[in-house]
Image (tube, rainbow, N blue to C red):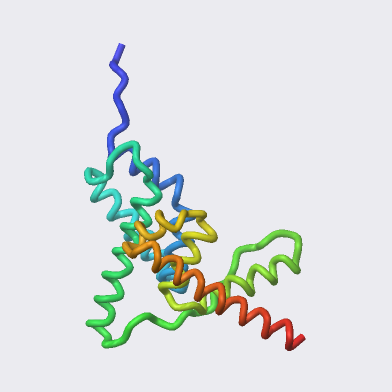
Length: 174
């Protein structure tokens, strides 16, 4: 009989990528603002995770590790882009949403909310996604984004206020 081998960091990274890929891609979309750049960022994050697998501690929370790795990749990309083009973050393009199901009213509302979130500044977008969509605690989001917990709370408060204002203006216009 062969002895049972414990899972290595590399094994866990390979398995973890498959488990969190949809969430990772959604995070990349929020960071990058369009599908093509999200695809590139997600692919780069997966590749970097495989390259850095020995740095992942087996048995720890893989999703937090890869989200943090992705955040750092995105920051590096912004810096490179700024140097190359003298610009910054590219304007957000319209994002085509997946079929939201048989309820057209719900699909329309979801589309409007996502479009409003994508219009937020990048720092607020990524914080909103991590806390409200992915369900991370403020502390975990702060760790992923490498910022203080108070900054997470502040970004969420400002984002909520902006979104609330947008939707209340739309309701008054109706």
